[in-house]
Amino acid sequence: MTRLTTAQWDQRFRQQAGWTFSARHYLLEKAALGNEARILDIGCGTGAVLAELASEFPRSVGIDINQEYLLWFREQSPRVLLTGADGYQLPFPVNSFDLVCCHFLLLWLKDPAAVIDEAIRVCKPGGILLVLAEPDYGGRIDHPPALQVLGEAQTQSLIDQGADPYIGRKLAGIASSFSRLRDIEVGILGYQASLHDKNSFWEREWEILADDIRDRFPTEDLEDLKRVDQEARANGSRVLYVPTFYIQAKIAKEGSDEN
Image (cartoon, rainbow, N blue to C red; front, top):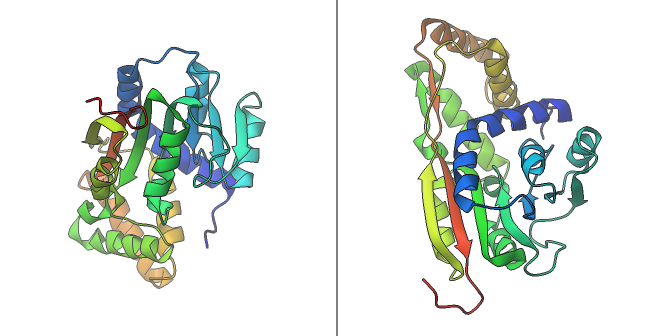
């Protein structure tokens, strides 16, 4: 069970939102929505993405099953509509939204296709499904080689937590199984990094990493690995890359044969 606080998770969610910023704006611009559009963020967490959406689309709505996250976000953004709800049973009628999105969510679900099915149900014909973003730890790169054990341990930790660390490579196949999803675009986020990132960035990485793998290494071994990581960052040789996939698709009318 996680030992991080809601504040620490909020920092992590904001970090992830920063990773997807460019792709998110590209895809939203491509969707060409007016600012009166209704957007649903499934699994909105502490609102790292939703706050940004709501600033441009005031009718945005967020749902999450974690009440602590919702309370945290409500204190920051009291005007945004939030609902405690499960993505498997969205509390909205059909054709309620112009765009439905999620962000680093599907890897945590036992049945991601069921949530996509619900997203399609509540999205209007002609609306947009945006899955942004889902990682694939099978393609993770850790360098120097001494740090590869970190990726291996974190991947196994995710599996033990009930997550699917290989969900990224499965997105296209899942999306293609839905007849109402058209114009499906699949992509992978690019890799950009400052060779000498601020310490705060790497400390957040280590908060998550240590929380995931602290029971898999003796404390002194974990400290040794952290020192190797710090030295690699200092000399510019550190690489940490996890391929992260996205999907954007258009919702067709039910029973439609349109291309």
